[in-house]
Image (cartoon, rainbow, N blue to C red):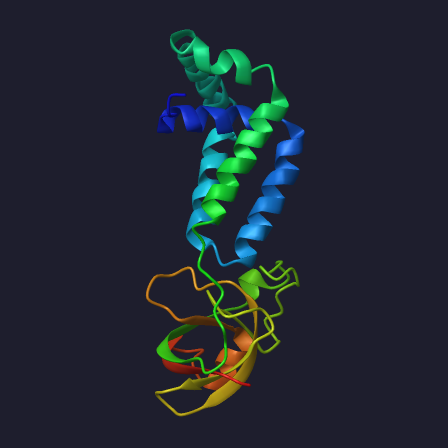
Length: 207
């Protein structure tokens, strides 16, 4: 069995998203991916799906024309997948599951003590669903961490002013490279970092 090229993989996904059932699968896989801390690969999957489903008519027509042309040149690939929605769905599921395997591993919070940079997120994300499934509340003392289990309580200390706050991990992040933790707006206010936006912090898990 020959290996699929990146172009063929993309075409498979482009076909799969035409099935309504794919979107339920997509949401499920994204949720599961986030639950294990998969930010980078989740972004890749979302970008791939967005690219495969252009929003404007001109882009949609161009995509359709490109796929028709590709179908004529590579009939052996789409001859079967184009007539079997379930096979396409299984393929997409397998791909997303494979990507999920590249996610960050959840770590044991016992003894966790790290220093790094913290940022905060507030009004723009207020009410959005977090990776744990609960809605984000900018006025609650919560935070996003890549690897600590949901529900872990950590003490965050601003190393610039020695102010500290205890927050509960309920989301995955930060999505910005080089940052250790994202805290809610309320936590950022108590840490005295609203003006600066970021701060060097020490994060300690509480037993």
